[in-house]
Image 1 (cartoon, helix red, strand yellow):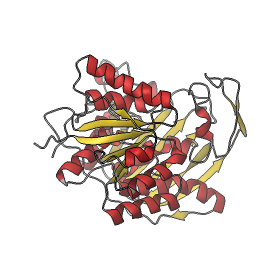
Image 2 (cartoon, one colour):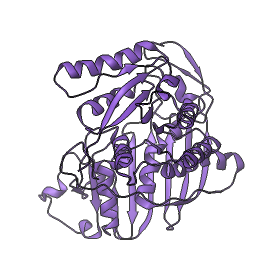
Image 3 (tube, helix red, strand yellow):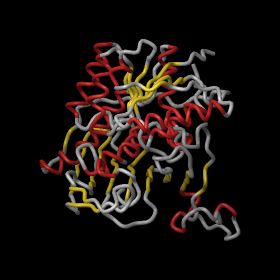
Length: 401
């Protein structure tokens, strides 16, 4: 088994970096973080301090250096992959510069904020024969992978459609720096939509067209979280987006993402087939629960049947059967996609969170507002083939060759 470590530099050491640092240090044995960079030096220092703490505690980890700027990282001959954890509207500039310096890039979602930027990044990567991919990688976790297998095995028959909802009232009450969620590249579809749409194409395949209606309910937002408590955000993007996705298979999915609604139970994701219904776990997670309902489950059954009495199943899902997870990585495994790409770099095989998937998802995400503005259906131009399902590997943290 090829266990070569791939050397990575992290650009952007903000809120999401914490779980990447933890998993690179403790889980993924073939990723070596050798440097970090952030516009706010204290953030980079905090990242280094975390890795130093892990090393002091006996974890076999490299303590990364701090780069003065991202170009110092791009010019470091040791660095093979740039991990781009900057804000969404910065993804394009950072990724483009890294690619032009000959570095492979794994980026947080989305690939870019519009199709012009995304298409250019893909073209550069192709011309330079570089690997380009990125989040979300939650679809590689036990939850979505189990759902994919159940669907592929025919457990709910032919797919009729799906329904997805991400409902909340925004991030200004809890996030330490929420402004960018309401600026270019932000909004609920670009922020949370990638998890849902990536899961949809993994489960249902290539999308064909999109119809959308969007709105902005609140022109301003009051921050109530620290350290920006009391500041006002001018909202530049739509914050309630809803519509339908038509898939090449003929399936139709409805999706709603909103930052405008007071609600409990943020995530809802159901896939409907001719032989049953599958309740998919929150696609922003790696695990379960997964629930399955088939016609025979609706037949009369004794009220003492344990399968109908599970305490963790909401009342409206009584009668559904809880399905076991069939794959590894059920915990928060962010950086799984990065590890998979690093394995591909070492072995020459393909990797799952690749730019083909990212670009197709980006076109779907941006087509809701385009459809709403134009008042018509948007036919998609990108093609998509599902990436390989996850495979069993006997060592957690080391992916298959």
